[in-house]
Length: 389
Ligand code: PLP
Figure 1 (cartoon, rainbow, N blue to C red):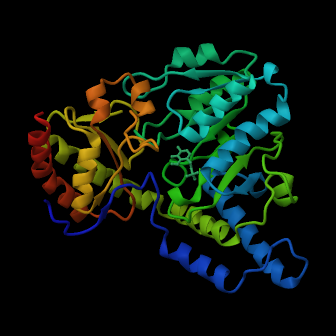
Figure 2: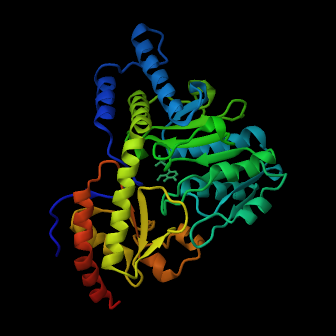
Figure 3: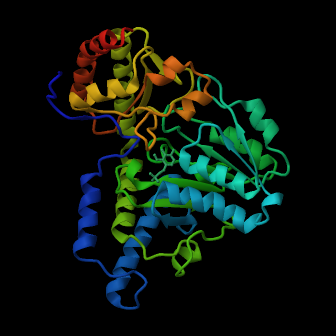
């Protein structure tokens, strides 16, 4: 057994460490400013003011106006409000609605698409090539004049592959089709300026950008009609009922401001660490396959397959060594389901079965990456012997 000498967290696409300034801001809210921002008294005014400051900070991250930001409980809720809320408001009759998305979306979009199809909407999925790049001809062909809405992930959560939302969105907007972008993995990592992009709706999540869990935001471009998905009070301009999660929202605002401020500094650093990790792994295991290598990828993600080895076994050994990574999605029975994203890329089953996602953050250090790289030969040869690879 390999002894864990430290903890190395490389699962930042799952969730990130909240920044100290995020925690400090949230603690003040939890301890002192706990009033309901909708209450009529002065105490509540300060909570309301904090929410509006956070709205400005989140808007600034993506070049939006504060009134175009709706706070939600996270990426999944933002996506549900964007897609279901848009179709409900604009094409409530399913037989008249067409929704187009891609084969490699996060399940928050994919499951919504499946439900829309079950409800009677015409739903279509656009495929990708073996590098995870969208099939441009299929995208062009599937965006028919009947299409009510398209949804596109910006940075893929499994492979890190980045879709060119400007180019793909332009095809849609030239045909008068509104675009929703799932920017949960890109907001705070890649520059996004909605004021110059053909995007009507964009989803974000605080816990992916060093903010807290349970907070998210949806950008709703002016004049984009939405119906609420959650019914109740008139919060968030009648679009998202429920008392605001003030500490979470404030934490998201602080995280958004920090990401905008610091991205220029951490981006080259994280890129160099990710690239060093890839090189080190390829040296230890020359058959390793970097999924999405030929595509543009977000700089913190490396999805690496070890053909002949099982990702679950690699994950367990890495975890015993104190290294946290992810593999493909596990189903509730405990058995491993092959990644839908890697399958859509048409990869060989041996490659899919041995895939591990390493996702870095601004907090990772060169020492941590060297620790992982130094362990890999020992770990992989142990597994190869066990698996007879
Ligand atoms: N979209 C993408 C691309 C994601 O990676 C995730 C979470 O991993 C989500 C949506 C859902 O976000 P949340 O966890 O905030 O609900």
